[in-house]
Amino acid sequence: MIGPHRDPARLLPADPATRAVALALYERVAGAPIISPHGHVPPSLLLRDEPYTDPVALLVTGDHYVTRLLHASGVDLGELVVDDTAGRDARTLWRTLASHWHRFAGTASGYWIEEELDGVFGVTTPFGPDTADAIYDEIAVALTRPEFRPRALFERFGIEFLATTDDPLDDLSEHAALAGSDLGGRVAPTFRPDRYLDPEAIGFAGNVDRLLAATGRPGDFAGYLGALEERRAHFIRHGAVSADHGVEELFTVDLEAGEGERLFQAVIAGRADAAQQRAFRGHMLVQMARMSVDDGLVMTIHPGVHRNHSSATLGRFGPDTGHDIPVATEFTRGIRPLLERYGLERDFHLVLFAVDETTYSRELAPLAGFYPSVYLGAPWWFLDAPDAIARHRASVTETAGFYRSSGFIDDTRAFLSIPARHDTARRVDAGFLARLVAEGRVRLPAAEQIIDDLVGAIPREVFKL
Image (cartoon, rainbow, N blue to C red; front, side, top):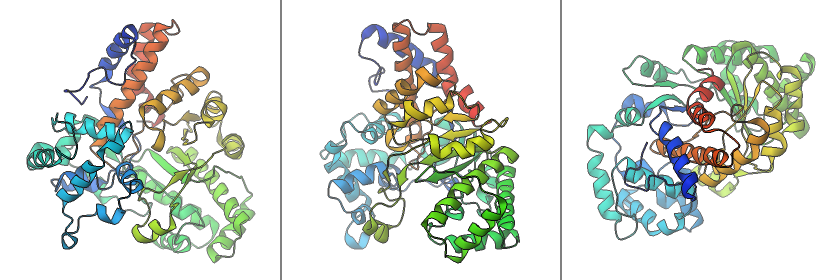
C-alpha cells in the first residue's frame, strides 16, 4: 500500500518461515481498497480540495497522537500553532517536531509518520534536526502539485468508503455536494448525538432546545425522541450507515415511558441529581438501540474514556486537544439491559469498542461469541498500534473467531495517516494468521480467505455497505 523504500516485511514475524507466509498473506491485501467506517476527516477537506498550506498542517496540526507527546515532552500546546506575530511560522513548528523526534521511537505515531514520509512523498532521508529543513522543502514543493491535493490523495489511497463524524443538526450539504461530484469513493456522514443525550454535556439544555426547534417538535419526551428520529432519517437520506456514541461509562437501563418523561423534564430543567443524570444517559442508549432496530443504522459505542482530563488545557484550548484518558470499563452488566431488549433482534448491529484491554477475553469476545447483534470493534485509539492489535487478536480470536469483528477502524482526523494505519493492521493480521498456519491451527487456504475478508467482506457486512 505505502512505504516502498522501507523493509517490505516490516511488522511481520521475525521467524523466516513464518515471515514468508505472512508476507504472502499481506501481499494479497496490500493494495485492496480501504473501507473506513469510522473517522473524523471533515467532508470540507474533500469538497473544497484546497492544497495543504505546509507540512505542519498536513502532518502535525490536529494529530493528537503527535501533539500530546510533544506536550508531554515540555512543548506548550500554544507553541504548536502558527503565529507570525510570535515568530512561529510552520517551519519553526516543523523544527520543533524534529528536535523531539527521538521521543517518538517505538510509538505508533512515529511509525505512521515515517510511513507517510516515504509512501506518500518518497522521502527516504531519516527525519531529525539535521534533515528537518530539507525534508520540509521537499514536502512543500510536492504540496504545490495537483497530485497532492486531498481528492487526488483520496483516490490514490484507494479509499472506497469513508465515514465522517457529524452533529445531528448538520444540514449535510457538504455530503450532498460530494455525493454529486466525481469523487472516486463514497463519503458518508455518521450520526453522533452525544451532546444531545448527556445531561452533563456542556450546553445540554440549549442543545435540546435547538434540536426541538429545528424539527418543530414539542418539548416533551416523545417530542424529543421524535426529533432524534427525524434527524437520523435525514442522515440516512444522505447515506449514513451508523450512529456513534461515546460514553465514559457503559451503563444502560430500560425504563417505563412515564419514568423517561419524568427524567427528561428533570434534566432539561437542570434539577436532576447525579443518579438521575446517569439513568437518563443509560436509558437513552437503550432508546438509540431501539431506533437502530427501527431504521437500520449500525450502533457503535466507544466507552471508557475520561474526556478533557486537564481542566487547564480545556480552558485554554478547548476539547479534543489530546487529554482524553482511558479508564477501566465494564461491559457485561452495563450492556445487559440493552441486550435483554434488543440483543436478539434480527438485523440489529452493535459494535462495541474498548480502550481497556482487560475486557477483551473476559467480556467482549464472549458477548460477541453469543449475541448475533454484537461485533467486536477494532483496537481503538491508544490501542490501534502494532503490538496492541496483535494482543487484541490473541485475546478474542479463540473465543469469537475472526468473523465477529468489525474490520479495522482508523478513527483518525489525520487524513494522511489513513493508509498507514490500515496498512499496519493488514500487516499485523497477516503475521497473526501466519503464526496460526505455522502452528497447524489454520490451513493456508483458510488463512487466505480470512485475510481477504478482514479488509473487505467483514467490514461491509458489519456496517451494511
